[in-house]
Length: 138
Image 1 (cartoon, one colour):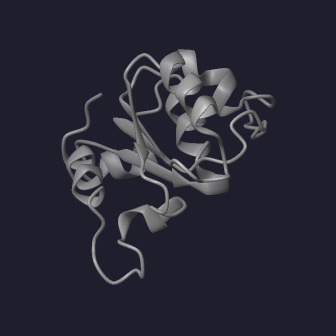
Image 2: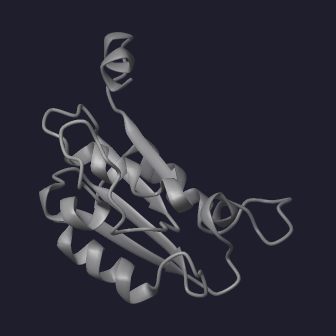
């Protein structure tokens, strides 16, 4: 998919995953020559769950964190139960170019963090997310 986007003219490819899919962009970014510019992990569940890629059957977000060279934005609400703040802090510290945002309790889970409670308007975090997508850095 990344190669196809690049062939179509994409100059940056930022991959985003949330909840049970939050580890996927991390494992993908860690692959050699992935072509991925940056990754975002929202409310990631199963940080140590192996994803079973063709070339690394035991690859998990935790096992590949040290090998990720791209900027990564980790996001978790303080009261999210998918992962704990210490778990996400640990993986963020293991990732060389990462930024961790711990959102206030009640901010939601996964893509919910992009909307204010009730889902009608953008959350305060949403602009940070969009800025990272346009100009990823950590």
